[in-house]
Image (cartoon, rainbow, N blue to C red; front, side, top):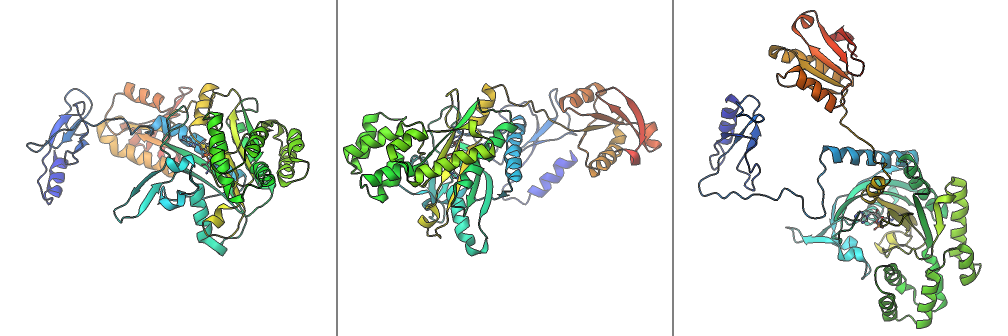
Length: 487
Ligand code: HAM
């Protein structure tokens, strides 16, 4: 009760007095919208049958109890320890691949100015924006993607950075999406981008990084492939039909919707931009082309689109991932800023939406007022890949892992156990210290649950001799060791 009195004294300076009472932690409801009801676990207090007792401030008279919804908002997720283990496993692979390729990690705020994301009308991402006015009357938005923030930072750094930049980031993105399998309202995206390289060597390296990632987690070329195309294919066609350059982004966005809305709608939307019927027919015909040879027949041998794509396929051979990629003119991508090669990772069974996607966006920096610097990159979400791993039975089994569990055999050896834990931790060992008097059966159960390798018991006789008992849990081997020799 001493601790409780101290808290009461500290809080007595608050405007309104707060009192505390003891309740069982199993009482319901445990969480209240009113923050003045305080719950804290008090190990020393008498429990009434369940777990340890809790101290709870009673409601002030006439105060209402509002039971909260314990689920997070629709489309968002909690990450309980078991989810966090999977997330960390995934992110560690993202980071390790990026490190192997020599990329530097960056990050940006989740909250950006809204203007950063307002580009071409019709972009789906624009309509999915979580945006609002802050208290300073500024229009802000939760980022739906990382690329505009990257462009902003590159422009801000200006001449102080030397090109090319190879950056990676892992960040949470927000989109008010219709929820489907693997599509959520919040997701994390791994991005790798190269700023300052105008050649297809950059795109080829980026795809190689994604392939490395897939291989690390057990995904093969028979599970996943990349559809590759170039927006220059459309650009060259539009030019041929005299369609003005400024319509290019808009046309790409319309075409990207081909699998989502009826073809007549698409034709109508394309027609509304002023493109002739002939051009529309030709565009739609080109989109069904699935080989570079056929594309050459349609576009003629010359032209940047064919040259870029040929180089990419040749580099894919050298990087060693030819079997992963295929040409598919229907890949256009839904973001207005892409200008050249575009690619998407897809599952070969066709059950899931795009696993990842990216491409070249040489004109994005200038559209924000920056220098004309070429750029390309990709985004890889954390949701679809988990669905795929589940489907393939490739999800790792990740338990909690603490190397040692340290337990005092008597209450008055709790301090000694703390000394042992500190010594081990200072040597880099992970330690779960048992903080209460518990029967050995409980300690063994806990050791198994946290996958401890060793149980370290602090007993009176051994401790008087400066030693502890060590039990290796896998073999059952047990021995005594001086604290100083404990590694
Ligand atoms: P994006 O295709 O919009 O591209 O998104 C990239 C990836 O993020 C998708 O392939 C998917 O894995 C994941 N993703 C997107 N939206 C959701 C969602 N609602 N729920 C779950 N996962 C999602 C971009 O965002 C570009 N900025 C990528 C980029 C980087 N291009 C160049 N650099």
